[in-house]
Image (cartoon, rainbow, N blue to C red):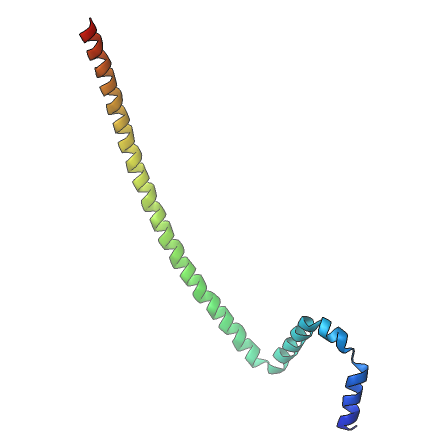
Amino acid sequence: MSIWSVAKIAATKIPWGRVFENLPVVVEMANRAKGRFMGEGATSDLEARVQQLHEENRKLEKALLETSGHLQLAVKTLKVVLARQKVLMAATAVSLVLAIAALVVALS
């Protein structure tokens, strides 16, 4: 079989319109076949991706711990602010009662 006969068969028998319509599927199939034939290369690509995911996981873990620390500090700060607000409310109430009592005594 000559090159020309193979080219003629490819030109006439292969439905090129459908191939181009389904190009993403064809590319995926070609990549799978390439991965099967390459064997070791596909494994190293997979290992590289796994390593990349581990690195990203470590970075996210550090960021999560840092954020958790910030949130704990914010909770402590809010507790202090709440305690101070309660003291100010009590002082305001005592001041208001004393002002009312002074007004009553002054008007009597």
